[in-house]
Image (cartoon, rainbow, N blue to C red):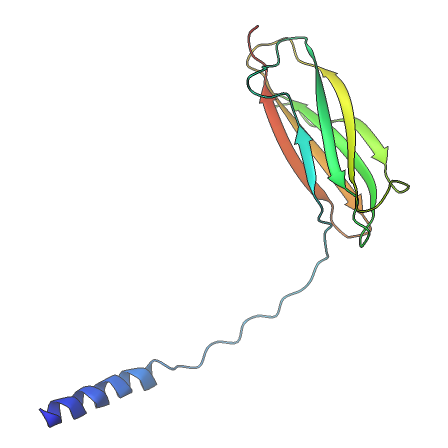
Length: 143
C-alpha cells in the first residue's frame, strides 16, 4: 500500500513538473487612443404609444457632461430604413454645466411607410481621441 502511494505521488509530481512549461511572451500592444465615457440616453415614445405614419414625436437626448473630460459637442443622427445616417441636430455643449443631467428634445416626423425602422444615434465628442456613441430605434406602426 505504501509503495502505491509513493508511485502515485511521483506520478502526480511528474505531471505537475511537465505541465509547467514556460509561457510564450505575449506580443506588446500599442495604445491607439482613449475615448470619452459618460451617461447618455435616447428616450423615444414607449411601445404602448406607437408612432404612426407622418406623426410628430419627441426624441429626447439626456447625458451628463463630466467635469474630468468635458464634452465639446453632442450630435443626433437619424437613419430611416436602410438609408444612411443623417444629422438631425447638433449642440455645442462647451458652456453647459458639468456633472449634471442635461436634456435636449427634438420633435420629428415619422416616415409615411408602415413598418419602417427608424434608428437614432447620438455621438458625444470631447478632448479624447474617440467619441462615444449610443443607438436606439423604433418601428412605425399602423394607426
